[in-house]
Image 1 (spheres, rainbow, N blue to C red):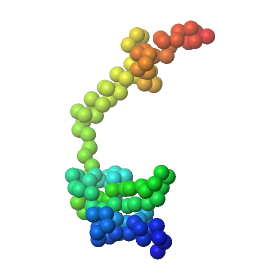
Image 2: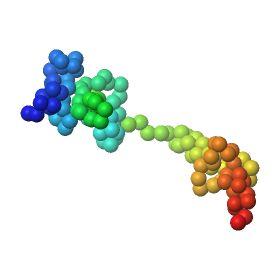
Image 3: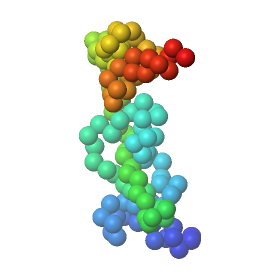
Image 4: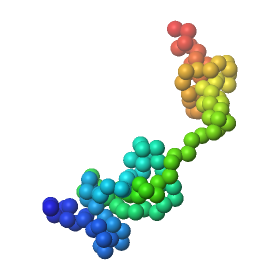
Length: 124
């Protein structure tokens, strides 16, 4: 085992206070938040079960691991929530000046679509 891996290998949690493994050295049954999301799961309020430590740019990097058996399924938005999201996104694409729905989000710095903010460039 390389020295750097040996420095991060603490499955009992005596050195770091929580079970710690090196990069790609965690046993099955643990997953990071991103891995849970990819599997359609979420931590579900469980505490951090273990850590993964590795040497990265700027020092030691950390990833939290959660237990797969305690993970809960991801929640999905209700139809009413999806309708509200669609309305909000449409409002972000609607120009206040010409009231047209654009295929891009209206820049907040301008407050109107690009055609209304720069009419001389649109005519050219």
